[in-house]
Length: 449
Image (tube, rainbow, N blue to C red; front, side, top):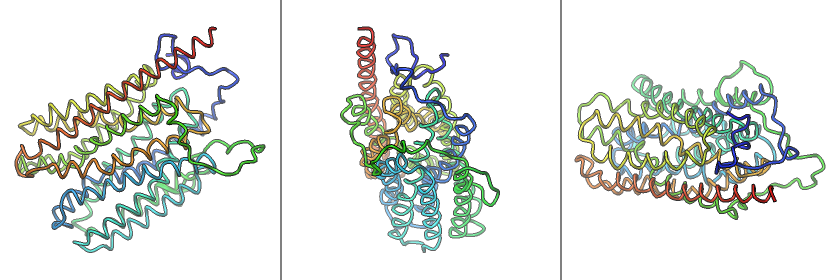
């Protein structure tokens, strides 16, 4: 493997990017880089991990806490979280580029903890309070942690950025395993409110250790605050102390087409995670396996994101993104749609999570590949702010397409919608890869001439 897969691909590679030695940024100290990855992983555990756990909340709310609310209405709480995280990405990314990560992470950890504490005092049946605390407040709070966590890792890594971001995304999967297991064990003993207050303690321990020195006063946002570092904030000669949201990336066709592809992919991406357990419980009543589906999905996505990041650094991130998105759609259309037994469904859950995990992680590393360092946060945020619409409407549309929850055929249109959206997204991603290849060849020809 070359010393820098992103910058030193052989001439025939469509994923190459040419940077002169004078323009090549110096790599930060390795220890700081690795600590930043660890801290960002903790942030993803405590923030995105909660969002990845919404399948647990969807099931619990439908059965116990909000039985009179429609499944699509409950699902909208989770999609609002995701949508706000994406919508605020442009702002939080620009703030991170300008001011660094410290105060953003403090705000994110505080807001997430407060939202969990407020949710713990909500009474059963109060849908709008759940909507405001878990959907709105938690979504806004998480947005100021997720985007900066990605940005600082992108600043530290060039050679193995895909692998580094894949490792960070493992935090989301670990949280998606840890929070449902904890809540499932604690709710019968302490009740829903007590379990959420324990989760709030867990979050605050994950969130305040992210600046310079490791202390033992707290463990998760705490650890991250002490060990994550961002690059110095521009040079002291820069007189412009303002920051701005940067949508200039959409002038680049490869960036714009990639965004369209990701928009369609996200439209169908989360439907299996939200509805496959309900599907299994209704179609295969009395089974003892479906309660582990969310853990299976998050465990498989941990492995998939890490291996995908490593493989993307070797063969090119553009070259990997569209095939895994296409395969994810095919798994929905062929395995889930045609499944008649629980064994096939288990295989679908694991295989889908393995491949689809890269649909979340690879676009970020690709943006870093085609974007200047000082604009990475702002342009990544702008990219995902456009994705907001699909993340907001995808899951409720899927829920509305369920004709009858108690028969297999009742889920047909939901599954077709999910698989088709992913395949359409993969076609646009392939188009972006083709544009990137043409741009790389044009740059090489200009250098030769």
